[in-house]
Image (cartoon, rainbow, N blue to C red; front, side):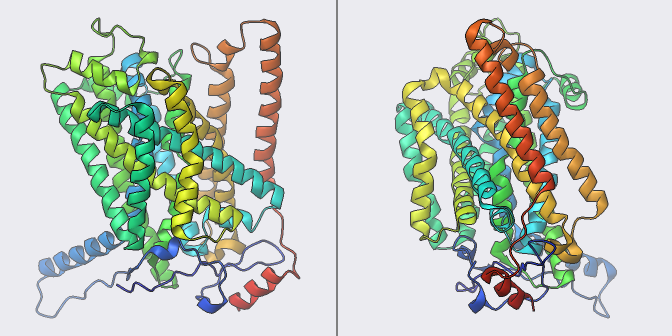
Length: 540
């Protein structure tokens, strides 16, 4: 492997009609000012598959076997990014939502996890295309397209998403440390700060090592939950009904929002568009198409594994906690720490224990913290065009995002951690449309993607998916009734409710107004600008 290989960031030239223009020709590295230290941390060149031709004396069966082996070998060379992406579907936020969903509604909410997983796969397919064909991360593409005020607004929204994401991970890590080692929650949060920086330092050796560490952690959490799932069993008929038939039980709005946000996570939109650039790919149509297919397959496999892990967590809660007299708690109040106690109480005879749950939670939180911190680096570098050393970026990102988690750990403790996790995941659900819209516009632009832009049969379903997520957010936040809803919070009457209604209306109008702006407006760079001339030289 060539450790000095540095991935170029751009052949994305501006035109008078748009902000982008794709060139088939790889630009001169000496002319590129946009090379990212994050992406260039990769040190592996991936060659695209050249399937062996059949020898004259070779039997058809042997030739077919050799082709399959060659195909699998190439798939393994692309393996890694999809596993960092899938963590968003099995982080502590998902665990909390799964446990409360299973305890309160048995299997009725499985459908939202399934469709959120499908939506995440579709979105990641677009980020793969943006990274491979346009050789841009989403944050870079936004900075180079929208006016400064819009870029800064998107950056703030993205940082809010990063903080909400990191809150999920550090709280989960702290709870796991408390379960396994008995240390206080706030101390576990501080330990996560050190362990994450330590693991991220493996990028100095090779980015491939960091990917392997995350894959191992994902397998650890999967195996522990599969063991417990086998011990507790499942009501198969109820599971299939909840999977196939969508329902919105009263009081489930916050859980539904949290599952959308925790599964269709904003940081993944930035992460995947950078990770696919850590493999050097030939700039030919055939090579790019093959790389796209391998990356999409490599993403789908861990995504499906993550969905099954979510089923295991829901089954654990549904079989033991739902309508069980031994569970003397309101399902909405069950936290990750309470889950450990309830597992011991309900499943003591089966062998499913607190230690297995703690190990799985620790592996989930640590792997998710790694990917979230790495995504935070991409967001900061892309939107702000910051050029700082790798260790300093890691340190700045962790310092920014760990503050909310430490605040919750100190002042709310375990009793408030469950609600904090659900609210944080719900915030992610509100942020994600602001990132999907630019992603869809860029990948549907001929000036940005050239002949590789999204065809109409991709563009229109993706617009339908985007509008569906926006509609789901609006309904679940404003229209849903029952416990833990905005309607319940504003129905008490008095001056407080009136102020809350006015504030909600203002925020709602700003929210929808900015979404409309992103859909229909984009600034063109000035034709005479230095950046425009430089990019035209690269394109030529």
